[in-house]
Image (cartoon, rainbow, N blue to C red; front, top):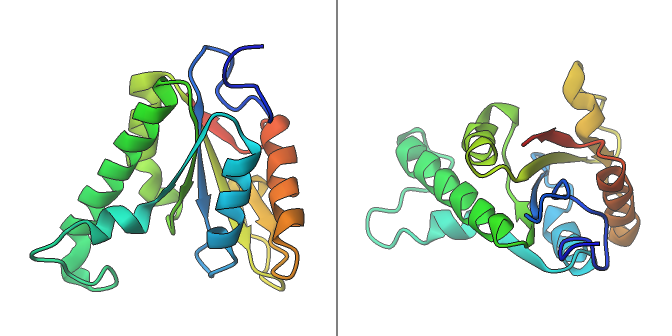
Length: 168
């Protein structure tokens, strides 16, 4: 057992590095509640919110939903990925709370390849949302808004089985 397996599933691949879990909820399915629960279950752990990196811009901030915010959003997401993988290479298991779709994962994939730390991608799906077509369906977890602990347990079980692994 190395330093990334204490108290939770091994998400780092057993290389002495931690791993990164990108927890997305494009429909507002509860990542703000589930992410801290995941981080509490993984040891040692770090919880990062991509939104905090966007809001770090003090002068010239553009609301993230506007088209002219593209450069800001891309830069903030790259900074989030770099910070996440810096912690992971230090042996931490990192939960990143981010509203990112599969096409926005490039910065995380790049950092995973560069550092050798594992990357997991989990999408929380709101109740009643139809299944996503294609291979990313295996990354979806039905969120239980009234029982976020159950959602966190489902994610942890999937992490232990490497169901959400995207790569190194």
